[in-house]
Length: 488
Image 1 (cartoon, rainbow, N blue to C red):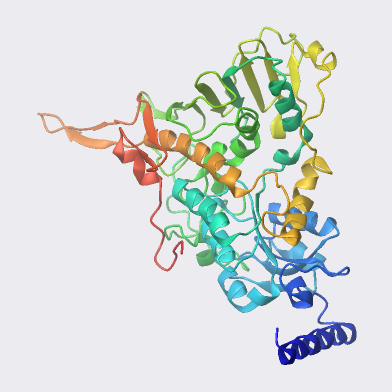
Image 2: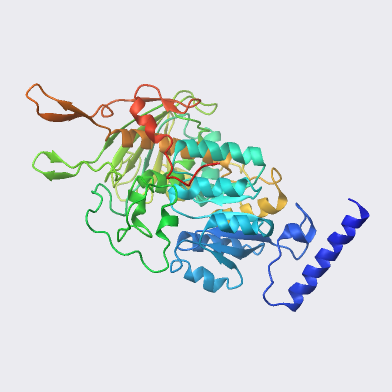
Protein backbone atom coordinates (compact mmCIF):
# COMPACT_ATOMS: atom_id res chain seq x y z
CA UNK A 1 0.00 0.00 0.00
CA UNK A 2 1.30 3.49 -0.86
CA UNK A 3 2.20 5.88 1.96
CA UNK A 4 -0.47 8.35 0.82
CA UNK A 5 -3.14 5.61 0.79
CA UNK A 6 -2.07 4.46 4.26
CA UNK A 7 -2.37 7.98 5.59
CA UNK A 8 -5.84 8.37 4.11
CA UNK A 9 -6.91 5.02 5.55
CA UNK A 10 -5.66 5.95 9.01
CA UNK A 11 -7.39 9.30 8.80
CA UNK A 12 -10.62 7.59 7.79
CA UNK A 13 -10.45 5.21 10.78
CA UNK A 14 -9.68 8.06 13.16
CA UNK A 15 -12.59 10.05 11.81
CA UNK A 16 -15.01 7.13 12.19
CA UNK A 17 -13.84 6.42 15.72
CA UNK A 18 -14.14 10.05 16.80
CA UNK A 19 -17.52 10.46 15.13
CA UNK A 20 -18.84 7.26 16.69
CA UNK A 21 -17.95 8.53 20.16
CA UNK A 22 -19.36 11.97 19.57
CA UNK A 23 -22.48 11.17 17.61
CA UNK A 24 -25.23 8.94 18.99
CA UNK A 25 -26.60 8.26 15.53
CA UNK A 26 -23.51 6.34 14.41
CA UNK A 27 -22.88 3.36 16.63
CA UNK A 28 -22.33 0.33 14.37
CA UNK A 29 -19.22 0.28 12.20
CA UNK A 30 -18.66 -2.75 9.97
CA UNK A 31 -15.50 -4.69 10.73
CA UNK A 32 -14.09 -4.29 7.23
CA UNK A 33 -14.10 -0.50 7.70
CA UNK A 34 -12.25 -0.86 11.01
CA UNK A 35 -9.32 -2.81 9.69
CA UNK A 36 -9.84 -4.19 6.21
CA UNK A 37 -11.37 -7.47 5.02
CA UNK A 38 -10.68 -10.39 7.32
CA UNK A 39 -9.44 -8.21 10.18
CA UNK A 40 -11.17 -8.39 13.55
CA UNK A 41 -10.35 -5.72 16.07
CA UNK A 42 -10.78 -6.62 19.77
CA UNK A 43 -13.91 -4.47 20.01
CA UNK A 44 -15.23 -5.35 16.57
CA UNK A 45 -18.36 -7.38 15.76
CA UNK A 46 -19.95 -8.80 12.65
CA UNK A 47 -22.48 -6.33 11.25
CA UNK A 48 -25.51 -8.31 10.06
CA UNK A 49 -28.35 -7.26 7.79
CA UNK A 50 -31.56 -9.21 8.29
CA UNK A 51 -33.92 -9.81 5.36
CA UNK A 52 -37.22 -10.89 6.89
CA UNK A 53 -37.09 -9.87 10.55
CA UNK A 54 -40.50 -10.89 11.91
CA UNK A 55 -41.43 -14.31 13.27
CA UNK A 56 -38.55 -16.73 12.66
CA UNK A 57 -36.46 -13.88 11.31
CA UNK A 58 -36.88 -12.08 14.61
CA UNK A 59 -35.62 -15.07 16.59
CA UNK A 60 -32.76 -15.59 14.13
CA UNK A 61 -31.30 -12.10 14.45
CA UNK A 62 -31.82 -12.21 18.22
CA UNK A 63 -29.77 -15.42 18.32
CA UNK A 64 -26.99 -13.85 16.29
CA UNK A 65 -26.94 -10.85 18.58
CA UNK A 66 -26.90 -13.03 21.70
CA UNK A 67 -23.72 -14.68 20.47
CA UNK A 68 -21.99 -11.51 21.69
CA UNK A 69 -20.04 -11.32 18.43
CA UNK A 70 -22.57 -9.64 16.16
CA UNK A 71 -24.45 -6.39 15.83
CA UNK A 72 -27.69 -6.00 13.90
CA UNK A 73 -26.97 -3.05 11.65
CA UNK A 74 -29.78 -3.27 9.10
CA UNK A 75 -33.34 -4.57 9.06
CA UNK A 76 -35.39 -5.30 5.96
CA UNK A 77 -38.97 -6.50 5.80
CA UNK A 78 -41.92 -6.01 3.45
CA UNK A 79 -44.29 -6.04 6.46
CA UNK A 80 -43.64 -3.17 8.86
CA UNK A 81 -46.14 -4.49 11.41
CA UNK A 82 -44.47 -7.90 11.42
CA UNK A 83 -41.06 -6.25 11.81
CA UNK A 84 -42.09 -3.98 14.68
CA UNK A 85 -40.53 -6.06 17.47
CA UNK A 86 -37.16 -6.17 15.75
CA UNK A 87 -37.27 -2.44 15.02
CA UNK A 88 -37.98 -1.79 18.70
CA UNK A 89 -35.18 -4.08 19.88
CA UNK A 90 -32.59 -2.68 17.48
CA UNK A 91 -33.52 1.01 17.21
CA UNK A 92 -30.13 2.01 15.79
CA UNK A 93 -30.45 -0.42 12.87
CA UNK A 94 -31.46 1.22 9.59
CA UNK A 95 -34.74 -0.12 8.19
CA UNK A 96 -35.53 -0.93 4.55
CA UNK A 97 -38.54 -2.46 2.83
CA UNK A 98 -36.79 -3.62 -0.37
CA UNK A 99 -33.71 -5.80 0.12
CA UNK A 100 -32.39 -4.73 -3.30
CA UNK A 101 -32.29 -1.10 -2.23
CA UNK A 102 -30.61 -2.07 1.04
CA UNK A 103 -27.89 -4.10 -0.64
CA UNK A 104 -27.35 -1.43 -3.27
CA UNK A 105 -26.98 1.42 -0.78
CA UNK A 106 -25.41 -0.35 2.18
CA UNK A 107 -23.16 -3.04 0.70
CA UNK A 108 -20.02 -1.38 2.03
CA UNK A 109 -21.53 -1.22 5.54
CA UNK A 110 -22.78 -4.82 5.74
CA UNK A 111 -20.60 -7.75 6.76
CA UNK A 112 -23.11 -10.60 6.44
CA UNK A 113 -26.76 -11.25 5.59
CA UNK A 114 -29.44 -13.40 7.27
CA UNK A 115 -32.47 -14.42 5.20
CA UNK A 116 -35.69 -15.57 6.89
CA UNK A 117 -38.36 -14.98 4.27
CA UNK A 118 -40.92 -17.26 2.56
CA UNK A 119 -39.36 -20.02 0.46
CA UNK A 120 -39.97 -18.41 -2.92
CA UNK A 121 -37.66 -15.49 -2.14
CA UNK A 122 -34.67 -17.32 -0.65
CA UNK A 123 -32.63 -17.87 -3.80
CA UNK A 124 -32.76 -14.38 -5.32
CA UNK A 125 -32.09 -12.75 -1.97
CA UNK A 126 -29.23 -15.06 -1.03
CA UNK A 127 -27.50 -14.89 -4.40
CA UNK A 128 -27.72 -11.10 -4.45
CA UNK A 129 -25.83 -11.02 -1.16
CA UNK A 130 -23.33 -13.71 -2.19
CA UNK A 131 -22.45 -11.82 -5.36
CA UNK A 132 -21.38 -8.96 -3.10
CA UNK A 133 -19.11 -11.35 -1.23
CA UNK A 134 -21.32 -11.47 1.88
CA UNK A 135 -21.61 -14.56 4.09
CA UNK A 136 -25.23 -15.71 4.20
CA UNK A 137 -27.45 -17.56 6.66
CA UNK A 138 -30.62 -18.83 4.94
CA UNK A 139 -33.60 -20.41 6.62
CA UNK A 140 -34.70 -23.88 5.58
CA UNK A 141 -35.48 -25.07 3.04
CA UNK A 142 -32.55 -23.46 1.28
CA UNK A 143 -34.64 -22.76 -1.84
CA UNK A 144 -38.02 -23.29 -3.44
CA UNK A 145 -36.69 -25.02 -6.59
CA UNK A 146 -34.08 -27.68 -7.33
CA UNK A 147 -32.34 -25.42 -9.85
CA UNK A 148 -32.05 -22.68 -7.25
CA UNK A 149 -30.48 -25.05 -4.72
CA UNK A 150 -27.85 -26.12 -7.24
CA UNK A 151 -27.13 -22.49 -8.10
CA UNK A 152 -26.59 -21.46 -4.47
CA UNK A 153 -24.39 -24.49 -3.82
CA UNK A 154 -22.16 -23.54 -6.73
CA UNK A 155 -22.22 -19.84 -5.80
CA UNK A 156 -20.91 -20.52 -2.29
CA UNK A 157 -17.75 -21.99 -3.79
CA UNK A 158 -17.52 -19.47 -6.60
CA UNK A 159 -17.71 -16.42 -4.34
CA UNK A 160 -15.87 -18.06 -1.41
CA UNK A 161 -18.45 -16.99 1.18
CA UNK A 162 -19.34 -18.61 4.50
CA UNK A 163 -22.81 -20.18 4.36
CA UNK A 164 -25.22 -21.89 6.74
CA UNK A 165 -28.80 -23.16 6.38
CA UNK A 166 -31.14 -22.71 9.32
CA UNK A 167 -31.63 -26.36 10.26
CA UNK A 168 -30.19 -25.94 13.74
CA UNK A 169 -30.45 -29.63 14.57
CA UNK A 170 -27.40 -30.09 12.35
CA UNK A 171 -25.40 -28.55 15.20
CA UNK A 172 -27.01 -30.68 17.91
CA UNK A 173 -25.33 -33.51 19.76
CA UNK A 174 -27.93 -36.08 18.67
CA UNK A 175 -26.84 -36.47 15.06
CA UNK A 176 -23.20 -36.71 16.12
CA UNK A 177 -24.00 -39.43 18.65
CA UNK A 178 -25.91 -41.43 16.03
CA UNK A 179 -22.99 -41.09 13.62
CA UNK A 180 -20.72 -42.53 16.30
CA UNK A 181 -23.11 -45.40 17.01
CA UNK A 182 -23.42 -46.17 13.33
CA UNK A 183 -19.68 -45.99 12.70
CA UNK A 184 -19.23 -48.40 15.64
CA UNK A 185 -21.45 -50.89 13.79
CA UNK A 186 -24.05 -51.06 16.57
CA UNK A 187 -26.95 -51.53 14.12
CA UNK A 188 -25.06 -52.87 11.12
CA UNK A 189 -25.60 -51.46 7.65
CA UNK A 190 -28.80 -49.43 7.23
CA UNK A 191 -30.98 -50.25 4.24
CA UNK A 192 -34.28 -48.55 5.18
CA UNK A 193 -35.17 -45.29 6.92
CA UNK A 194 -38.61 -43.99 7.93
CA UNK A 195 -39.14 -40.26 8.51
CA UNK A 196 -42.47 -38.78 9.56
CA UNK A 197 -44.05 -35.50 10.66
CA UNK A 198 -47.38 -34.23 11.90
CA UNK A 199 -47.12 -31.28 9.52
CA UNK A 200 -48.89 -29.59 7.84
CA UNK A 201 -50.29 -27.51 10.67
CA UNK A 202 -51.71 -25.01 8.16
CA UNK A 203 -54.43 -25.48 5.50
CA UNK A 204 -53.53 -27.72 2.53
CA UNK A 205 -55.50 -29.66 -0.03
CA UNK A 206 -57.84 -26.70 -0.57
CA UNK A 207 -58.85 -24.50 -3.51
CA UNK A 208 -57.48 -20.99 -3.90
CA UNK A 209 -60.13 -18.68 -2.39
CA UNK A 210 -62.26 -17.16 -5.13
CA UNK A 211 -63.89 -13.79 -4.78
CA UNK A 212 -62.36 -13.20 -1.35
CA UNK A 213 -59.87 -10.51 -2.26
CA UNK A 214 -59.43 -8.06 0.60
CA UNK A 215 -57.54 -4.85 1.05
CA UNK A 216 -53.80 -5.18 1.65
CA UNK A 217 -53.09 -4.53 5.35
CA UNK A 218 -51.45 -1.24 6.17
CA UNK A 219 -47.69 -1.58 6.30
CA UNK A 220 -47.47 -4.61 3.98
CA UNK A 221 -45.89 -4.13 0.56
CA UNK A 222 -47.76 -6.91 -1.23
CA UNK A 223 -45.90 -6.59 -4.52
CA UNK A 224 -42.53 -7.00 -2.80
CA UNK A 225 -43.89 -9.92 -0.76
CA UNK A 226 -44.82 -11.71 -3.99
CA UNK A 227 -41.40 -10.96 -5.56
CA UNK A 228 -40.65 -13.93 -7.90
CA UNK A 229 -44.17 -15.44 -7.72
CA UNK A 230 -46.98 -14.76 -10.21
CA UNK A 231 -49.05 -11.72 -9.37
CA UNK A 232 -52.29 -12.45 -7.53
CA UNK A 233 -54.53 -10.20 -5.50
CA UNK A 234 -54.03 -10.26 -1.76
CA UNK A 235 -56.18 -12.73 0.17
CA UNK A 236 -56.68 -12.78 3.90
CA UNK A 237 -54.87 -15.48 5.87
CA UNK A 238 -52.00 -16.11 3.47
CA UNK A 239 -49.53 -13.89 5.32
CA UNK A 240 -47.65 -14.40 7.59
CA UNK A 241 -47.93 -18.21 7.98
CA UNK A 242 -50.28 -20.11 5.68
CA UNK A 243 -48.33 -19.42 2.49
CA UNK A 244 -46.51 -22.70 3.27
CA UNK A 245 -49.36 -24.72 1.80
CA UNK A 246 -49.33 -23.05 -1.64
CA UNK A 247 -46.87 -24.15 -4.32
CA UNK A 248 -46.30 -20.61 -5.60
CA UNK A 249 -44.68 -19.67 -2.28
CA UNK A 250 -44.03 -22.72 -0.11
CA UNK A 251 -42.81 -26.27 -0.36
CA UNK A 252 -45.33 -28.01 1.90
CA UNK A 253 -44.57 -30.25 4.85
CA UNK A 254 -41.46 -31.60 3.14
CA UNK A 255 -39.92 -28.16 2.84
CA UNK A 256 -40.95 -27.12 6.32
CA UNK A 257 -39.73 -30.17 8.26
CA UNK A 258 -37.65 -32.25 5.86
CA UNK A 259 -34.42 -30.35 6.49
CA UNK A 260 -34.87 -30.91 10.24
CA UNK A 261 -35.65 -34.62 9.95
CA UNK A 262 -33.93 -35.99 6.85
CA UNK A 263 -30.67 -34.26 7.83
CA UNK A 264 -30.02 -37.03 10.37
CA UNK A 265 -30.03 -40.00 7.94
CA UNK A 266 -28.43 -37.84 5.27
CA UNK A 267 -25.45 -37.18 7.53
CA UNK A 268 -25.27 -40.52 9.34
CA UNK A 269 -25.34 -42.55 6.11
CA UNK A 270 -23.41 -40.13 3.90
CA UNK A 271 -26.26 -39.94 1.39
CA UNK A 272 -26.02 -38.06 -1.90
CA UNK A 273 -28.47 -37.34 -4.67
CA UNK A 274 -31.45 -39.73 -5.05
CA UNK A 275 -31.84 -41.91 -8.11
CA UNK A 276 -35.64 -42.33 -8.08
CA UNK A 277 -38.78 -41.34 -6.21
CA UNK A 278 -42.42 -42.42 -6.05
CA UNK A 279 -45.32 -41.24 -3.96
CA UNK A 280 -48.95 -41.43 -2.93
CA UNK A 281 -50.94 -38.48 -1.62
CA UNK A 282 -54.03 -37.95 0.47
CA UNK A 283 -57.38 -37.25 -1.19
CA UNK A 284 -60.02 -34.60 -0.54
CA UNK A 285 -63.46 -35.44 -1.88
CA UNK A 286 -65.88 -32.63 -2.68
CA UNK A 287 -68.82 -34.86 -3.55
CA UNK A 288 -69.71 -38.52 -4.01
CA UNK A 289 -66.85 -40.17 -5.92
CA UNK A 290 -65.63 -36.71 -6.88
CA UNK A 291 -62.10 -36.04 -5.86
CA UNK A 292 -61.13 -32.40 -5.49
CA UNK A 293 -58.49 -31.09 -7.86
CA UNK A 294 -56.43 -28.33 -6.26
CA UNK A 295 -53.05 -28.22 -8.02
CA UNK A 296 -52.13 -24.85 -6.52
CA UNK A 297 -52.20 -26.33 -3.02
CA UNK A 298 -49.94 -28.93 -1.44
CA UNK A 299 -51.83 -32.14 -0.53
CA UNK A 300 -53.17 -32.79 2.99
CA UNK A 301 -50.83 -35.79 3.39
CA UNK A 302 -48.25 -37.68 1.40
CA UNK A 303 -45.94 -40.69 1.43
CA UNK A 304 -42.83 -40.39 -0.73
CA UNK A 305 -40.37 -43.24 -1.21
CA UNK A 306 -36.88 -42.08 -2.19
CA UNK A 307 -34.06 -44.39 -3.30
CA UNK A 308 -30.43 -43.39 -2.72
CA UNK A 309 -27.50 -45.17 -4.35
CA UNK A 310 -25.13 -47.18 -2.19
CA UNK A 311 -22.60 -45.06 -0.28
CA UNK A 312 -19.31 -45.74 1.50
CA UNK A 313 -21.35 -46.26 4.66
CA UNK A 314 -23.97 -48.64 3.27
CA UNK A 315 -23.79 -52.05 1.65
CA UNK A 316 -26.70 -51.46 -0.72
CA UNK A 317 -29.13 -48.80 -1.91
CA UNK A 318 -31.00 -47.02 0.86
CA UNK A 319 -34.79 -46.62 0.76
CA UNK A 320 -36.11 -43.60 2.65
CA UNK A 321 -39.83 -43.27 3.39
CA UNK A 322 -41.14 -39.77 4.01
CA UNK A 323 -44.61 -39.52 5.61
CA UNK A 324 -46.51 -36.35 6.49
CA UNK A 325 -50.01 -35.32 7.46
CA UNK A 326 -49.99 -37.56 10.52
CA UNK A 327 -49.12 -40.77 8.67
CA UNK A 328 -46.63 -42.91 10.59
CA UNK A 329 -44.81 -46.18 9.96
CA UNK A 330 -45.51 -49.30 11.96
CA UNK A 331 -44.05 -49.18 15.45
CA UNK A 332 -40.92 -51.31 15.69
CA UNK A 333 -41.39 -54.50 17.70
CA UNK A 334 -38.42 -53.56 19.90
CA UNK A 335 -40.25 -50.46 21.19
CA UNK A 336 -42.29 -50.95 24.36
CA UNK A 337 -46.07 -50.48 24.11
CA UNK A 338 -46.03 -47.30 26.22
CA UNK A 339 -42.80 -45.84 24.86
CA UNK A 340 -43.02 -42.80 22.56
CA UNK A 341 -42.25 -43.46 18.91
CA UNK A 342 -39.88 -40.71 17.78
CA UNK A 343 -40.97 -37.63 19.67
CA UNK A 344 -44.65 -38.26 19.09
CA UNK A 345 -45.42 -35.90 16.22
CA UNK A 346 -42.18 -36.40 14.34
CA UNK A 347 -39.39 -38.93 14.16
CA UNK A 348 -36.75 -40.90 12.31
CA UNK A 349 -36.27 -44.69 12.38
CA UNK A 350 -33.09 -46.33 11.05
CA UNK A 351 -33.29 -50.03 10.19
CA UNK A 352 -29.99 -51.84 9.87
CA UNK A 353 -29.13 -55.50 9.29
CA UNK A 354 -28.11 -55.83 12.97
CA UNK A 355 -30.50 -53.49 14.76
CA UNK A 356 -32.42 -50.22 14.83
CA UNK A 357 -32.15 -46.71 16.23
CA UNK A 358 -34.45 -43.71 16.27
CA UNK A 359 -34.58 -40.02 17.19
CA UNK A 360 -36.95 -37.08 17.28
CA UNK A 361 -36.96 -33.69 15.56
CA UNK A 362 -33.51 -32.10 15.09
CA UNK A 363 -31.96 -35.49 15.89
CA UNK A 364 -32.88 -35.03 19.54
CA UNK A 365 -33.06 -37.88 22.03
CA UNK A 366 -31.34 -40.58 19.94
CA UNK A 367 -32.07 -44.10 21.17
CA UNK A 368 -31.04 -47.61 20.25
CA UNK A 369 -33.79 -50.21 20.16
CA UNK A 370 -34.77 -51.69 22.46
CA UNK A 371 -34.25 -48.43 24.35
CA UNK A 372 -32.56 -50.24 27.25
CA UNK A 373 -29.52 -50.63 24.98
CA UNK A 374 -29.02 -46.87 24.90
CA UNK A 375 -27.65 -46.72 28.45
CA UNK A 376 -25.64 -49.91 28.05
CA UNK A 377 -23.37 -48.83 25.21
CA UNK A 378 -20.22 -46.80 25.67
CA UNK A 379 -18.90 -45.55 22.34
CA UNK A 380 -16.00 -43.11 22.34
CA UNK A 381 -16.68 -39.61 21.07
CA UNK A 382 -15.44 -39.32 17.51
CA UNK A 383 -17.01 -36.08 16.28
CA UNK A 384 -16.47 -32.68 17.86
CA UNK A 385 -19.55 -31.14 19.45
CA UNK A 386 -20.72 -27.63 18.63
CA UNK A 387 -20.56 -25.41 21.74
CA UNK A 388 -24.15 -24.71 22.70
CA UNK A 389 -25.52 -27.52 20.53
CA UNK A 390 -28.55 -26.44 18.51
CA UNK A 391 -28.35 -22.85 19.72
CA UNK A 392 -24.66 -22.84 18.86
CA UNK A 393 -25.71 -23.12 15.20
CA UNK A 394 -26.06 -19.32 15.12
CA UNK A 395 -22.80 -18.35 16.78
CA UNK A 396 -21.02 -21.00 14.68
CA UNK A 397 -21.99 -19.09 11.53
CA UNK A 398 -21.09 -15.73 13.08
CA UNK A 399 -17.66 -17.02 14.08
CA UNK A 400 -17.20 -18.63 10.68
CA UNK A 401 -18.05 -15.38 8.91
CA UNK A 402 -15.56 -13.51 11.09
CA UNK A 403 -12.84 -16.11 10.49
CA UNK A 404 -13.38 -16.18 6.73
CA UNK A 405 -14.14 -18.77 4.08
CA UNK A 406 -12.67 -22.19 4.74
CA UNK A 407 -11.29 -21.26 8.16
CA UNK A 408 -13.95 -22.87 10.38
CA UNK A 409 -16.11 -25.99 10.03
CA UNK A 410 -19.85 -25.34 9.86
CA UNK A 411 -22.70 -27.78 10.43
CA UNK A 412 -24.85 -26.99 7.41
CA UNK A 413 -22.87 -25.13 4.73
CA UNK A 414 -24.43 -25.03 1.30
CA UNK A 415 -22.16 -27.87 0.11
CA UNK A 416 -24.29 -30.06 2.42
CA UNK A 417 -27.50 -28.03 2.67
CA UNK A 418 -27.82 -27.69 -1.11
CA UNK A 419 -27.91 -31.43 -1.94
CA UNK A 420 -30.09 -32.06 1.13
CA UNK A 421 -32.59 -29.46 -0.09
CA UNK A 422 -32.50 -30.93 -3.59
CA UNK A 423 -33.49 -34.29 -2.09
CA UNK A 424 -36.62 -32.82 -0.51
CA UNK A 425 -37.56 -31.01 -3.68
CA UNK A 426 -37.06 -34.13 -5.80
CA UNK A 427 -39.66 -35.81 -3.60
CA UNK A 428 -41.89 -32.80 -4.22
CA UNK A 429 -41.51 -33.41 -7.96
CA UNK A 430 -43.34 -36.69 -7.49
CA UNK A 431 -45.96 -35.08 -5.25
CA UNK A 432 -46.59 -32.25 -7.70
CA UNK A 433 -46.45 -34.63 -10.64
CA UNK A 434 -49.34 -36.50 -9.09
CA UNK A 435 -51.65 -33.66 -10.15
CA UNK A 436 -50.38 -33.29 -13.71
CA UNK A 437 -53.31 -34.11 -15.96
CA UNK A 438 -54.07 -34.22 -19.67
CA UNK A 439 -57.53 -33.58 -21.06
CA UNK A 440 -58.91 -36.31 -23.32
CA UNK A 441 -62.12 -36.87 -25.25
CA UNK A 442 -64.08 -40.03 -25.63
CA UNK A 443 -65.69 -41.07 -28.91
CA UNK A 444 -69.01 -39.66 -27.72
CA UNK A 445 -67.41 -36.25 -27.13
CA UNK A 446 -67.29 -36.45 -23.33
CA UNK A 447 -64.22 -34.94 -21.67
CA UNK A 448 -62.10 -36.85 -19.18
CA UNK A 449 -58.62 -36.54 -17.68
CA UNK A 450 -55.59 -38.78 -17.57
CA UNK A 451 -53.04 -38.47 -14.74
CA UNK A 452 -49.80 -39.90 -16.16
CA UNK A 453 -47.73 -38.95 -13.08
CA UNK A 454 -49.62 -41.25 -10.75
CA UNK A 455 -48.57 -44.78 -9.93
CA UNK A 456 -45.14 -44.46 -11.52
CA UNK A 457 -41.57 -44.32 -10.26
CA UNK A 458 -39.79 -41.18 -11.44
CA UNK A 459 -36.18 -41.75 -12.45
CA UNK A 460 -33.89 -38.86 -11.57
CA UNK A 461 -30.74 -37.76 -13.42
CA UNK A 462 -28.89 -35.58 -10.92
CA UNK A 463 -26.24 -34.33 -13.31
CA UNK A 464 -28.84 -33.06 -15.77
CA UNK A 465 -31.34 -32.15 -13.02
CA UNK A 466 -34.26 -33.83 -14.73
CA UNK A 467 -36.72 -36.70 -14.52
CA UNK A 468 -35.89 -38.99 -17.42
CA UNK A 469 -39.14 -40.93 -17.75
CA UNK A 470 -41.82 -38.28 -17.12
CA UNK A 471 -40.93 -34.98 -18.71
CA UNK A 472 -44.01 -33.15 -17.42
CA UNK A 473 -42.50 -33.20 -13.91
CA UNK A 474 -39.50 -31.19 -15.07
CA UNK A 475 -41.56 -28.02 -15.20
CA UNK A 476 -41.19 -27.94 -11.40
CA UNK A 477 -37.38 -28.15 -11.42
CA UNK A 478 -37.14 -24.45 -12.20
CA UNK A 479 -39.90 -21.86 -12.01
CA UNK A 480 -40.42 -18.98 -14.41
CA UNK A 481 -40.06 -15.83 -12.34
CA UNK A 482 -42.39 -12.89 -12.62
CA UNK A 483 -41.14 -10.08 -14.88
CA UNK A 484 -38.60 -7.91 -13.12
CA UNK A 485 -37.11 -10.73 -11.04
CA UNK A 486 -34.21 -12.97 -11.94
CA UNK A 487 -31.59 -15.22 -10.42
CA UNK A 488 -28.45 -13.46 -11.60
